[in-house]
Image (cartoon, rainbow, N blue to C red):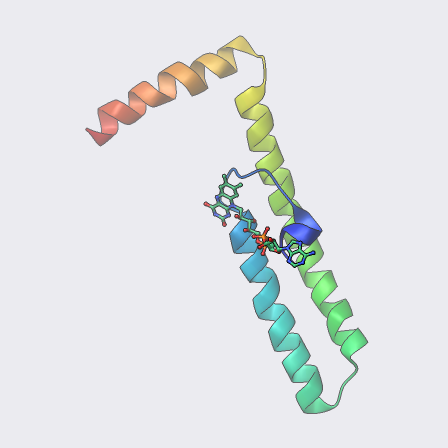
Length: 93
Ligand SMILES: Cc1cc2nc3c(=O)[nH]c(=O)nc-3n(C[C@H](O)[C@H](O)[C@H](O)COP(=O)(O)OP(=O)(O)OC[C@H]3O[C@@H](n4cnc5c(N)ncnc54)[C@H](O)[C@@H]3O)c2cc1C
């Protein structure tokens, strides 16, 4: 679970949330398997099928944000570093 499986840049507030999102369904699936006398391997496999696409989508999203922030495109940098902070100041104050 968590960063051990899907470490990601700390942009978008996905890392800790995804770790918790790992823990909740994993616990529920293991609990269900034990209560029903079902195979734990099957429970883990169902969990993997659910979480892997979700978690790695979060990794991709965070990585894209890093690329946007560190890219060298001057228009993109101007928007991120000049225009958006000004807009933020105007709309928040
Ligand atoms: C600057 C920054 C900002 C962030 N902001 C957010 C945010 O706003 N929202 C969000 O959801 N996420 C955020 N994250 C990501 C989030 O902190 C992590 O995704 C989350 O803490 C991962 O939890 P984890 O339990 O998987 O790993 P960790 O928090 O790294 O916990 C692993 C633990 O295992 C211990 N450990 C390691 N090796 C061993 C060993 N051999 N024996 C015993 N113990 C060991 C470590 O000491 C550590 O305590 C941020 C991360 C950073 C760096």
